[in-house]
Amino acid sequence: MSYLSSKRCQLYYEDSAESDPSGAQKPVVLFVNGWAVSSRYWKPLVNMLSPNYRCITYDQSGTGKTIIKGFKPTFTIQGFTDEAGELIEHLGLHTSKKLHIVGHSMGGMVATELCLRYHQALISATIIACGIFEETLFTSLGLFFLGGLIDFSMNFRNIFQHEPLKSLFVKRAATKEISKEYHDILIEDFTQSDKEATNAVGRFSIDREVLKRYTRHVLLISSPLLCSVGMADQTIPPEGTITLYETRIAKSSAPTRLAKFMDLGHLPMLEDTARFAAELKKHFEFAEQFHKKSPQ
Image (tube, rainbow, N blue to C red; front, side, top):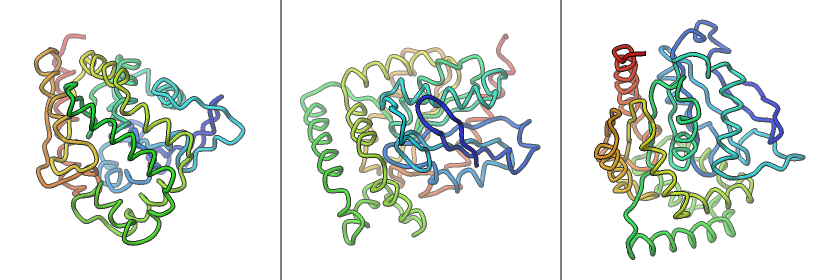
C-alpha cells in the first residue's frame, strides 16, 4: 500500500510485489476501475491471480484513498490516462514486455489509451463491459435517459445507503449474489466518491465523440484483446461489447477474443471470481505465447 505524488493527486495504489518480492519477476496485471468505485472490488480476483502474476490496483482521482484535496486534477480520459501512466512509469513497467492491462466499464476507455501509449510494454489488453453502439434513434434515446439517470443518482445518491434502494442499486450491477462485504463496498464507494469527478466520468462515458474516438483507438491496439461481457448486464447493454468484438474482428488483424458469461452481470470479477479468473489466465497465456512466436 503506497502513494505516488504527482501534480494531479496523491495516488493510492497496491502492488502485490510489495508483500511478495518474488512477484517483481512475474508478468504484470494493471487493473483500471470503472465509474465511482475504488480499487477494492478487484481484491478477490487479485487474490486468485497473484500466485502467478504481479497485480497492481489503484484508486483513480476522486475515488477511494487517493487524495485530491489541494490539487486540481482534470476529470477526462486524458487526465485519468496521465495519472495511470505516471504509475506505470514510476514502477518501471514501461521498460519491459510483460504488461497486461485490464479495464472495466469506463476504465476500458482509459485502458485503451494506456495500451496505445505503452504498446511496447504491452502483452495483452482486456476490456470488460465497455462496448460501442450503432448510432440510432434508439441508442440516442438510451444515452439521453442514461444521462438523466446519472444526474438523478448523483443528486440523490445518499438514498442508496438505505434499503430497499441499497440492494436494488447493487442488483442492477451484479446479477448474481455477491458477498455482503462487497455489497457494502460498492455503496460506500459510490456515495463517498468526489461529486465533480463522478459527474464528469458519467458524462464523458456517454459522450458520442468520446465513444467514437474510443472505437477508433480499440482498433489500433496491436496486442491480443479480450472483450469480456456478462450477458445479463443491466448497467451497460451487453450488445455494445459484442459489437466492439465484431468490429475489431472485421477491421483489425490483431488477435481478438470474446468471453461471454450468460448468467453474469456488470461485475463478473465479484459474481463468479473463479470463472472470470480462469478466462483471464487463458487470455494472458495465449497473449504471452503469441508474442513469443511473433517476430520482434
